[in-house]
Length: 162
Image (cartoon, rainbow, N blue to C red; front, side, top):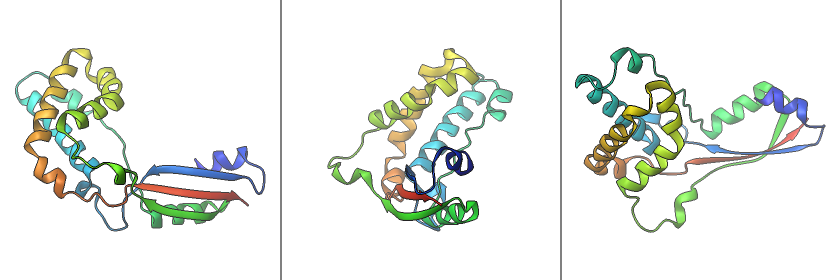
């Protein structure tokens, strides 16, 4: 990614990146996103056990998600050696949300972003049931979600082309 962007920018050109991020040393499984992915996986496995989804399809399904810390981003930029970091911080864009996020809202957001991926791999026939089960699991795991690490979930990086 950085090599491709380096080809697009002139020396001194600036690039701003905003991406998901986690505090250094925090396992992905302890973040809200990690818990949600685990709940989605559990929903798929339940449907597999009931014969609603083919086990081979579940086994071959992969959503390659990796969320970096600022330390990891710094190491990647230094290793690439095409950019310098002018500014970088871990931010929390949710600071203005005053009410808890409901299971229905989490499900809608996840469905909006992931439905196409699930439909392409599993077909459209399971989608409503999958997200219904996912929402139920979110409701059951509300304490786990509330206890998940919600600190600073976004990396903001300003780089300059060398």
